[in-house]
Image 1 (cartoon, rainbow, N blue to C red):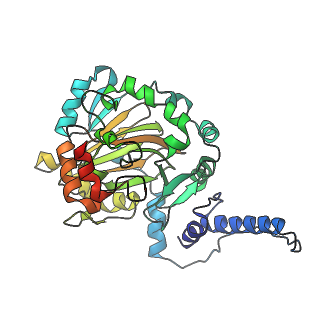
Image 2: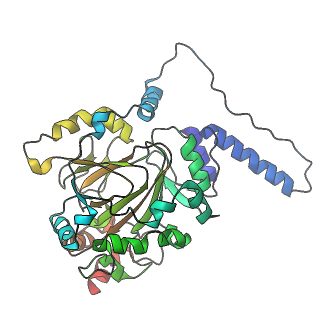
Image 3: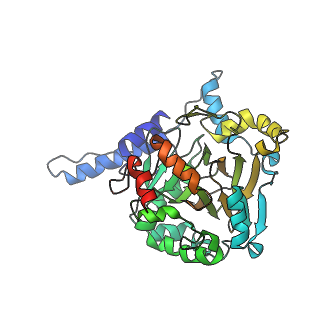
Length: 385
């Protein structure tokens, strides 16, 4: 963790190529920069630099619970029983109509739609080589709950990180600017979405994506491309600003666990006003520490408090209703890729308006963009449209 933090503090903004470990990454990046500076400085005598990969020192009969816990949380075996429950309502795309979908949206119930995205160009094109080619010289933002700062990666460097890393809380690429910086990636699914999932069309008559009324650039962040190595995750959270969302895996399967509004997952402790949340630092720790309590919740006498689970595969799209706690775990080897978008519709509009009016300190997706409408003005601006 110390070498990771040093690397992110010094090179997180400018970018770096991950090499074997965080220690090797920091030293090799430092050496590469010194060589570059020496070449650029014609007044300095030539200096020779070399890099030797780190070789761990073997010490017998010394043990550490701290190091063991972290190691266990990133190397544990995913039990088949952890992936076996599939109780999120599931329908085939051929039998899904806009009217049927709106029933789920109105009732605020998660829904997995099988095969809805199977014909998207993204499903056919998005391998590692294609993504690297389409994003030349573009940086993407990756974060981790365990890291002090985000990191900027090219997809080429991030894919190398995914291939080599093994850590408890990997950096998860979660980028909001891809549609602007790599419009060809947006072209690979935007029009197909309107055809295959008309209920998610922002121009639909039923009032989908009402935040678009605020104007492009002024609305809160709403669209992301997501990438991560095996065992990367999005820890338990409720989606921002009371929004609904959809999530479409493009490469790799995702394991989802949902808890209904008002029911906290085991080991997750939000403050009374929702400003802060205490939970395990990683999903590995949550599975190892709280999974038995989660299994008990499946049999809660109050059916409305029972969790829901599913595995979403490439070709599927998942409706994530507002107010539900959920976590996501990437379960396949290699670099997973997905798309997600948050939105406001008629079904969650009253809750969104209440949130904007009473929870201004929790409004997100706009504070770091000067052109965006700021939280203190969001409610008035939105209701005036």
